[in-house]
Image 1: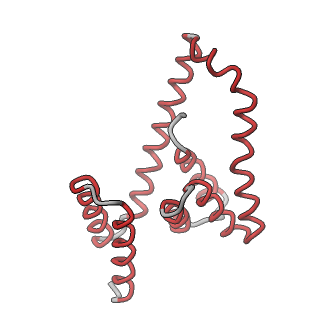
Image 2: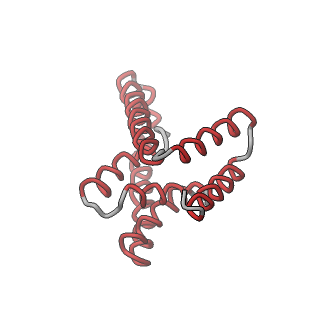
Length: 159
């Protein structure tokens, strides 16, 4: 409704990588990548992070904890949401939440780009992927597989 779950990446990156040190920036990028190639990317990412930080119990707890607040929030606010949207002040508030979410999303996207593009090879793979995706409409699964193969080959060949 207000952006996507990826708005949370700004908070995850700040807390789990910078403040607590539970994840490295690379592990966070891995979690996002794993989430993108599986159904339910946010649940998969949360489960992956939980597993890295706490093994199987951490994965189960992270998955459960990811869904519980949303269920509670929707149960409590659903009766009031439509009335809030009809109000001029309430509608302005909800619009502000949307714009703030977009800003958070843009900021974390910029940070992820900086962490992922570490050398000419990663920049080249990214540019190739953008051209193939937006210029030619290539299905993203082929880009993921090709990028994975290119990364594996460069690692195997020693860059």
